[in-house]
Amino acid sequence: MLVLGIESSAHTFGVGVVGAGRVMSNEKAMFPISDKGLIPSKVAETHVKNAPTVVQAALDAAGVRLSEVEGIGYTRGPGLGPCLQVGELTAKSLAQKLAVPIAQVNHGVAHIEVTRLLTKMRDPLALYVSGGNSQILKATAEPFRHYAILGETFDIGVGNMFDNFARGIGLNPAWGSTVGKMASGGNYVKLPYTVKGMDFAFTGLLTNAIKLAATERKEDLCYSIQETAFSMLCEATERAMFLTKSTELCVCGGVAQSRRLKEMLKSIANEHRIKFGACADEYNADNGAMIAVVAERMLKKGMGSMVSECGIEQRYRVDRAVIV
Ligand code: FE2
Image 1 (spheres, rainbow, N blue to C red):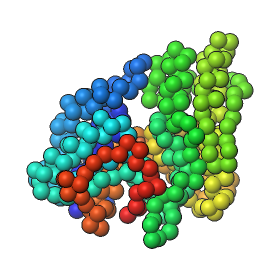
Image 2 (image 1 turned 135 degrees about the vertical axis):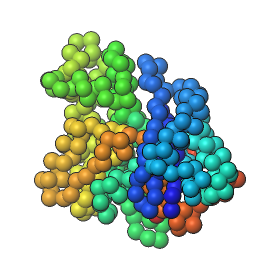
Image 3 (image 1 turned 90 degrees about the vertical axis):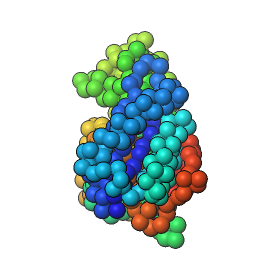
Image 4 (image 1 turned 180 degrees about the vertical axis):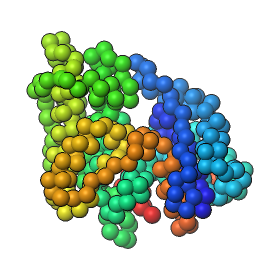
């Protein structure tokens, strides 16, 4: 089945095409980062402008015509309302034009499922880390097979924490990557470390690190905030690994692009002799292909919606979506 997937939950308008479980294209346009952060209405305006071009680019890259598409998928949530609406409306208008069904996809499930597909994992424990989300998840058994949240952030996502920190100490945030780049060559400065069982919190770490900018080198603070935050995530993930007796561990989401985080998780997996995997950066960043992957499976199982049934949900929790 040839399915076109649309992702628009935050700064990225992404479109991917999938056929018979294989990713055929993955194109995107991103809202440019600024020191003001994400203003949802402005991002949505940019998505509206980019949508036709990105849809066409994804079709061209896949080598297919729009008329050949047999189903549409889009991100129902979670995400920023105005941004989600652009994806929803694009999906609805395409589905209406083509008279094909629509799948309403959970963004978090899509991150895990594309990783599971591309790393050839069967039933991994997943650390899902992005700007807005930081969760440890594992699939439950039938009859309602879904990703149960074993641990999560009590406050903000780790990616947003890095961007807020970068802004707070006068660096240009670049969707989390500024801190990672500045971290190399830094020395450790003691910062708060907050893990409660398999949950964690980042605001104490953030505010303390910003306060210390008056006396400490920026490189040292970047190194220390990154090491501390990732150690917290690793400790909680390792605990979940023991609890679930998992033999596979994956990391996904925008922050999974961090080489340092993957290195730390891999060393834990090696120590316990379990498989570790992450996909290429293009599938960890928000993208349309991951939405198409899940949408194709949903549509094949008859889980499509009519145009009139579609909507968005800014707080669509990952544990409410069925895994297909
Ligand atoms: Fe994401």
